[in-house]
Image (cartoon, rainbow, N blue to C red; front, side, top):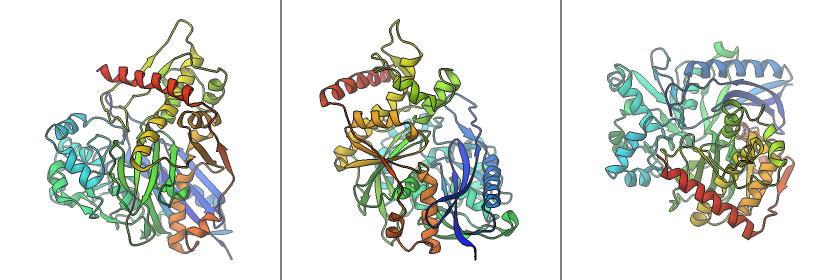
Length: 494
């Protein structure tokens, strides 16, 4: 008799992949495809929705083929890059415009107008978010206003909006299901996280027709079944969550005060606040997290826009490294960056600054500054931005005991140690760094009955690497003083 397997479809900013795991949490098979990035104008970032769908289908088919006959896929979970916005024709399933990616800044002036008219307070009260191009609502409005005939079609109910999980669910069910989950809806600036509904006042403020929107459900349940004609079999879709909430669940950060930081394209830190929607006084975000019961659960979140993307910049634009992995060796080859600071504000600065207009900059160079110092300073910037987040979390909810780290960039042991040194916190890194995919699989497996409860998942924990701080308080303060001077200087240049 075939053993159960759980699939996870993980659609990220730079790639799409599918992973199959067994009931012990072991990876059985996986397939990944890189996703092309489109930059049609300065500050604009787009993805091809049809490429996302075709890549997802390819990864699913290849992963199932690798799985073989010894395992039977009993459920699939979907996790996705959040905020990235698609609008498609309900009759054809075809997007009417490329997906506008979460990093995209084209709606900065619209967001500035909302702030100027005093709308940020009501938006923040209802959604837990700030006014920023990062979130989906202004992207939807832009598509409706810039694609000929789109607004009229939307008013007639002919178009559908979704973040990536909603679009993939639509495609996988051949248009039978138009749903989003709470963790993704909470990132649109249109969904009231307290009342659990699309908010009519916000829809009017952003001029988004309600007919566009999906129904919203919890992250764990039965969302529909993959159409037989796509994979040759029907697989129930039983879990959906935005990537950061999925990673948090994959790290089993389910208790009040648990905190994780995922180092991928950006860095996203979440701290569970349990059943309390705690409002930040330090420009963190309040958001929904995955829940297993009837009562909504919440988290505080801080977002760094550039983490792993800094390595890509060093490689692709600057030509200072040949691969992202090289950064660890280069950074460790010197004791200090020589007073050089990189402020990686290529798409603005996220929390706690939320400054969409600041530009990237390098400060403190001398005649002796070279490749090695710049590479190290760029890596150090990830630690400094993490420190800014930790300071905000501490003020809002208290200092966490430890931070569980994951994501591709967390494989850089030098960087994880430096983050521990700069934050003064212990870091814990699991052997399996891809906890985003794991979280979606956990949700789907719980829904399918592969595991009974979270206690069963705790039994799957793998080996942990710990990083303990080695830097004294005086040295830490001096280094961070230089960082904050550099950020301040960058923010004065427009």
